[in-house]
Image 1 (cartoon, rainbow, N blue to C red):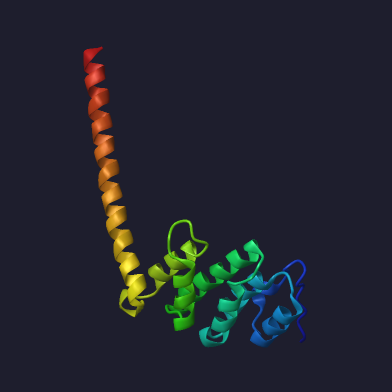
Image 2 (cartoon, one colour):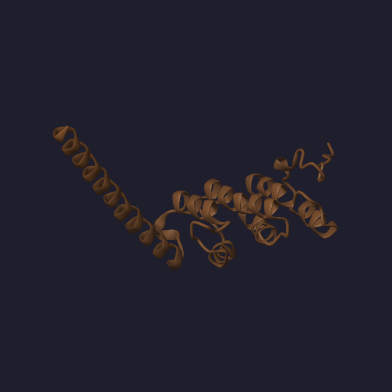
Length: 157
């Protein structure tokens, strides 16, 4: 059975399981390469999909580039690991909250064992944990002060 993919609309591309077909579409300059990258991440071995995912994260279309980072997160979820080239690409994109890679980094931290992460991502995970813990303490303190202030105002009324 020959499959035909609709590269213009992206129809059916989540089922793409042929890396060579993705390469050919890349050479033709097709539109939905990021969407097809999710299909590759879902349906192909990580070693085959990895170089295509890296290329997809460099696409000029912002939406398709976002889908490519979704594909990286999908690869982390399904494989419990990423390749060194994908880790390097995530590092170049930056793990911060304003980065296009933020969800891919979060998925990686969630689904890849801590001991298997590269050192830079381990440092980021520790930093984020400390930051989130401190922020939680701050917010709980703010709530306690607000509650005390409201109780004091009620008492004076």
